[in-house]
Length: 141
Image (cartoon, rainbow, N blue to C red; front, side, top):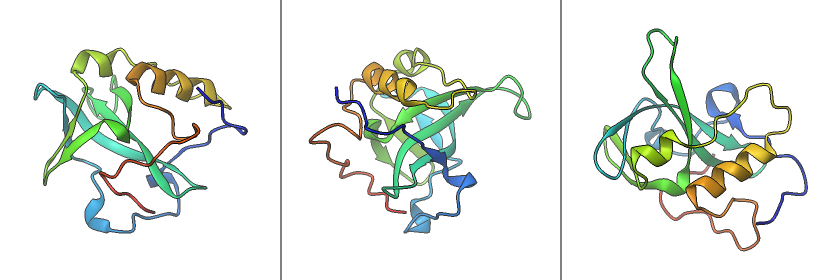
């Protein structure tokens, strides 16, 4: 696995001044189901690479009341298998998503976290040599 030459700085789409090229492609708020059809939660936000102008991850939130005791999971977009009007389907079972590394908001350089996350899901990271952006979904910001 190649380590990026600079620290990885992904930002929430909602915290940026960027927009999706196609507003209909905005999947925030949609339900996420695992490969077995179990509900994982809802997409709270999309994490974007502000340099490459690409969506890199889903921020999926589950449970909680008014934002308290909410569980958050980061899921690489490579895991998306299908999107319909209300649901985003991912390739992994709930157990794999639930066991993913947990992000620490105090991290200044999240490079190690992203390395661990991609390793956990078994996808090559977007900064690795030969990486090809997934053909589906096609997100351009």
